[in-house]
Structure formats: structure tokens, C-alpha cells
Length: 364
Image 1 (spheres, rainbow, N blue to C red):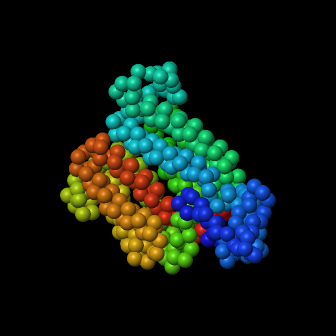
Image 2 (cartoon, helix red, strand yellow):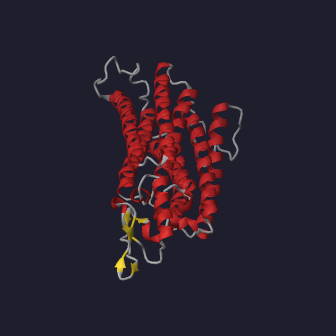
Image 3 (cartoon, rainbow, N blue to C red):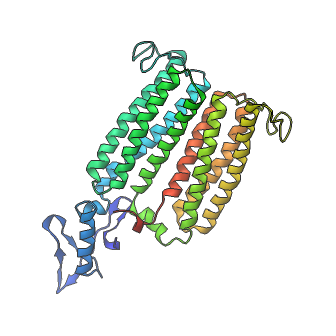
């Protein structure tokens, strides 16, 4: 997209008028008339307008004027709501409230039980999840109506809606079958996948100015590779962590930084094996992510990517500390809940890096 017609910070620049014979020349149908920017030929302007019509019906939509501004706040809200839902889910398990409502979809046969004790956390978690489905459906409608040319975003949204439906069913099955380890772990894994999907949608509806920085960035490939490595490792480590939690292996190694008083503990018990695996993967993840973050900071010319990498590296260091504190304080609710929330935040940062693409590679 030419410089005279790009959107910067969600607002369009005022176009310059090309003087031809002492007059400003305007082209196109009345509703889309724009002054020709200096140095821009009429043939080039017609090409830009034709491309805009292919991706949204008007030059205004392709420039990402006011329409994407309605989409991005909706997706940002969904992202924050999902992070809060993950935090609530962690609190539910940490307070042993998962079966406080023994039936599903109701709680003690009603949709509004007395919100006390564990019922408060469990039913709040259910209500929060139900609201997420409604909010995401509304966001999907906004995407469809306001960005009709962005079929890639709409398809991601449809996939996200399907994930939410499956996630709701898994949530019910965890209650009906009394917290089976596989279903409970799958429940968290799907939640992380949905979070990653929303992050991709948010990044790819971002201002063109943010993506333009990557177009000439020699470290752009490093940014995306670092994001992919970090996202995959964080996801795998989070799934293993969910297994540790749901198999009650969180205190299989009751000491830190050693495990049962040794660097490598006796691995003759499955719970010790799982807990120790989680620790080893955490150290590997920290080493890889910090290294990749340093490469991005030193090689990338994109300031947004450098900030994401810095936050990712610092977040991983904090996550290792939270893991130690969770064991040291015997799986205290604040520590294990913060541990889960930070894992979700790290996944969001990593996916945001992996999803960043040059402006030329993104549909207008």
C-alpha cells in the first residue's frame, strides 16, 4: 500500500493534492474520491483502488480506518477475558472446588446456587466460560460485518467458536466423570490453543504501521522462529504442568532446587518421574527462550518485536521463580494460580511474535 494511503496508529494520513495545471486532481467514484498524493501517477492510484475493492469494497476499508478499530477492541477484550478464565480455572483446582457443583450444566439443580465456599469459585468459572462463548460469538459477527474481505480472520474465528463448544463439553465431562486426568488435561490444552488462536487474530488485524516495520527487517525471520520455538515449548510445558496438577504430583518433589535431596532423584515412581520431567523441561524452556529472545533483541530492527522478546525473556525467568515458590509454599493458591496465568501470558507473547508478518504479506 502506498505511503499516501496507509493507516498509521489507526488513523489515516491526510492525503496531499497533486497539482496538474494548477488544480487538484481527484479520481474515482464520488464516494471514494481522494486527492492524488504527490508523486503518485493516476495509473498507480487506480491500481491501489482496485486492490482495495478486492479486499473490502473500498479504499477506506483497505486502509484500516475506523472499521478495524471496532474489531481490535473486541478481540483484546476476548483475550483478557480468556486469561481471566484460565486464572479462575487454576483457582478452582487449587482450592479443591472442582466438584463443588456435583452436576452439570446446573449446580445443585439450579443455574444460580448459593455462591458460598467452593461453589462460588466453581460456578463463577462456569458463568465466566459461558459469557466467553457469547462474547466471542459477538466478536465473530463484528469481524464478518466489518471486515468482509478478511476471510482468513473469519475462518480463525469459526475455528475458535468450535473450540469453545468442544471446551464446554470437556468441562462438563470433567464433572460428570469426576475429574479424569486425561479429560482435565485436555481441557487446559484446548484453552491454551484457543488463547493462541485469539492472539493470532488480534495480531493480524493490527495497524499496518506495526507490520510495515517488519517488511525491511533483516531479523524478521529470527522473530518468527523465536516465537514458534517459544510457543511450542510453552505449550508442551503447560500440558505437562497440567498433568502434574491433575495427577496430584505437584509435591512429589517436596524440596527445591533439588528433588528428594538429589539433583537427579530416584525415578522409580510415576509421580516423581512426571514432576521431575516438568522441572527439566522448565529449565530447557528457559534456556531456549532466553537465548532466542536475546537474538531477537540484538538482530531485529522492529521495536515491537524487541519489546515482545524482552517481555518473553523476563517472563520466563519469573515463571521459573514461581515454580520454585509453588513447591516451597506447598502449592499455595496465589503461587500456583500466578504460575498458570504467567504460562498463558508467555504463550500469548510467543504467538504474537510468531504471527507477525510484513505488511505486504497481510491482506489489506
